[in-house]
Amino acid sequence: MTLFTPGDVSRVKLYTDDFAADPHRHYHEMHRTGSSLVPVELAPGINATLAVRYPAALKILHDPEHFPADPRRWQQTIPPADPVLAMLGYYPSTRFCDGPEHKRVRQPIKAALDRVDPNRLHAEVEDAALSLIESFSERGEADLLYDYSFPLVFRVLNRLMGCPDDLAAQIAEGMTLRFNAIGEESVRGAAQAKTAFERFAAVKPDHLGNDIASAMILHHQNLKDPELVGAFMSCYGAGIQPLVNLITNTLCRTMADDRFGGGVLGGSMLVRDALDEELFYDPSMSVFCARYPTTPVLFEDVWLPVDEPILIGITACNNDPDIQGDRTGNRAHVAWGAGPHMCPATSIAYLIAQDAVEQLLDVLPDIRLATALTWRSGSFQRALAGLRVVFPPYTMPPRVPAPPLRPATARTDMSIPACGATVASPDYANHLHDLADHATHRDRTRPDIASSEGPHER
Image 1: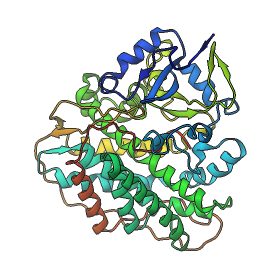
Image 2: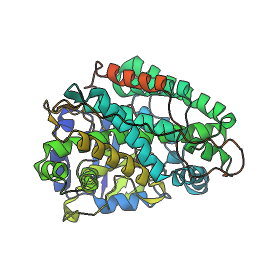
Image 3: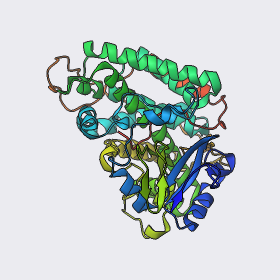
């Protein structure tokens, strides 16, 4: 039996440039140990255990009794200003509770997400995608991360949530700073976004509409204000950066990987298959789903320390050599998590990502990479520093934007129809594009630990 304690083992440092440059080499070495658990360092001095085998991940994620999600006891041992808390720090959220409390808080979120109209969502993604492509198609070049993926996901999510334009702009600016800045500026961005979420939760009950936020408010569970703020933060945290990275990384794969480029661009392979390959082989959240044993746990001949995090190595588990084979049509990966905390928005995420990739490849079929790829270092995400591309300049034909939906203003228990979206004003749309454009001048190589959610944990 083994006990992972400082000094006894060599911990793999997940946050280094060396790990980011070739994580699959490190995962291969982890698998060669024959163990399901590997001691790691999330940041300097922050120890954890990483599950690197698929069966081990499922056991952990389906056992909240021995592997609870509440980090607060562990968090008391971490300096309050440590950047790792941006990813793992507690706030009132379904992600950090289990049992009846988790079911109570998750229910309004899942109910609201289930009411999203996929036809309307498709129209919203198409409108946002074509508008953004139009903004750079005549240039013959773009950075798809900043010119396309990020503003598209943010615009669609704001429409789905029914966030007012002024608060959406504040959230966009705050989240952009968290995504691109470092040090105090990143902290300032996080604080600005949180303040905007609190204002959103305060004003939304008086401006109900046909959107996700209104459906959460109207749910019979009557979420308290802090819980509502946490629900909004979860939707934006899980819905933005991981989805941005999934879209960007999949677009990169279609251009850089010979197995997919010709097939997807030529129409013989579905974009959905390319997305699934990305979610299996190199998911945008590579390490997540933290759990915190409150008593010593013996797991596969390893004694796990009390309150020290054990995380799921999502990429490592998906690439477990014991489960390899033909993955065509196989979506049994753990990129969305598993167990009671599994992501409730997988169909929405798939639709947004698939539509975003298809719209771009349909309009600009001759797109290709312009520069070598650089990956951000960081313990949790698989994120490109940028995705510069070139293509023959193209002038888009005139188009008619999607019409706004009629708002539902009556405050009755879940009396609104299936959620569609409100349409952002032109001023806000321009502001968001300016933010994304401004972001291209920021540092893109810092360790990326800004986002507070993954796509799996709700």
